[in-house]
Image (cartoon, rainbow, N blue to C red; front, side, top):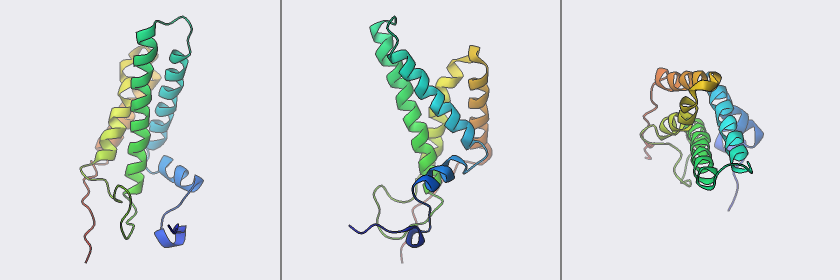
Amino acid sequence: MKVKSRAQTGRPTGLRAAWSATTQAWFAPAAVALGLFNVVVAVGVASDGQSTMPGRVIGPAIMLGLGVAMFSGLWLRWRSRYSVGGPSVGGSHSPFGLGDVLIVAGVLPSLGRFWTVIPPIQALVVIAGVIGQGLHLRSRPTTS
């Protein structure tokens, strides 16, 4: 399988792609900070020796799952900005605003920790940013 270069696909790759996905919108850096916070808290709870077993597994698994969903949503949202010709794994456009839904779902654990003040405010900012920019309802590109 031949790998296309940046000039052929028209989108950045590697670290430039990660940076581009992180800075794609004004709310994206806050979403990334919340995602990293959720992952760190999940790892901390899972590695805590004094926590009970069901809470030690279920809570961190949910937080990690939603964190991965949020990062996937940011990636899908970024990727849908580029029209890539030819077939690709998963398609090049995300239908029905899936990336936006995943971003909002990923910040939900932060709303539950209202006593920590900063993460819930960041979560509200991210949700307002996704809604304020309008849900990106995209259709697949037509081929002629």
